[in-house]
Amino acid sequence: MFRRHSVAISPITKTNFSSYKTQSKSNYREWIKFFLSALIPLMIGVFTVVTTVLQQKLSYQQREQDKEDARLFRQQSERQADNLRIETVFDNYVNDVSELLTMKNQTQNLVHIRTKTLPSLRQLDAERKQHLFLFLYESGLIYHHHMEPISSLLRFALLVKANFSNSKLATMDFSAASLVESVFTGALWKEGNVNFANTNLTGAIISNEQLHNSTLYNCILPNGTWGLIYTKNLVVNGDVEQNVRSVSGTEMESIEMSNIVPLDVRSVRMFITFIEKSNSSSSIDEDYCICDNVKFSITKA
Image 1 (cartoon, helix red, strand yellow):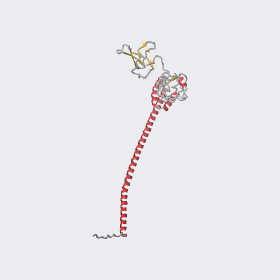
Image 2 (cartoon, rainbow, N blue to C red):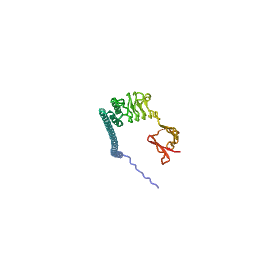
Image 3 (tube, rainbow, N blue to C red):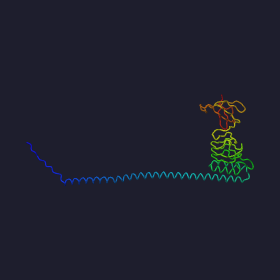
Image 4 (spheres, rainbow, N blue to C red):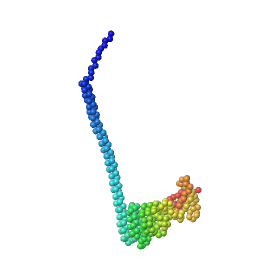
């Protein structure tokens, strides 16, 4: 019923194997060629990106360096300009004062010297201020004069960080001057010969002995506290609201400070010098006094 069919299996010959091997090698070479052809542009792209990033970084660093160089150059130019300006102020001061000292009317010339000294001190640095003091000292202007003692040239002067080390001071008047962080190490003067009244000595290097030999009324001491307060003709208020009496003892109205002093303040110490008192027939229901050009409102009961 069924017929058997024979299937002939051809054997793998040597020729067919060689052909398959040759085809595999050909495909392998094609893949290598494709990879190499793709790798070259990829490397070029990576190189381009890296080069661009490096160039941008170098450009940024160069710009920052240029800015820093410009800033340093500007600062140097400003320092040179300031130094030239300060040197010009000092030279002009020395020349003008030297010329005034050669004139006959010494008393009037001293007034002119004072008017030149104060504005010049405001414009000089610490080094030139020291040279200026030495010039005044050697000229006999800040310790004595053959006609009369001279002590007022440095009143109201700006003498921040001034150096008076190892100097000899006599009849010196620093009243109302600013001597913040100034140095008096080794400086000598006799008792009462140096006046620091109304002077700011905050941070100054000065010994207790030197302070003891000085006039310190209304002076801010190196530690920031106040020296002796000149109490002549002063009215002292020890509380926020307290009756005020004049020097003669006449009772005046109380000072209302509730709108000025915070509620958490327990007491306020005031030193008031009455210069003048307003007319009591004022149209408003209050009176006031002028205290060193400051008006304090005094509300009537």
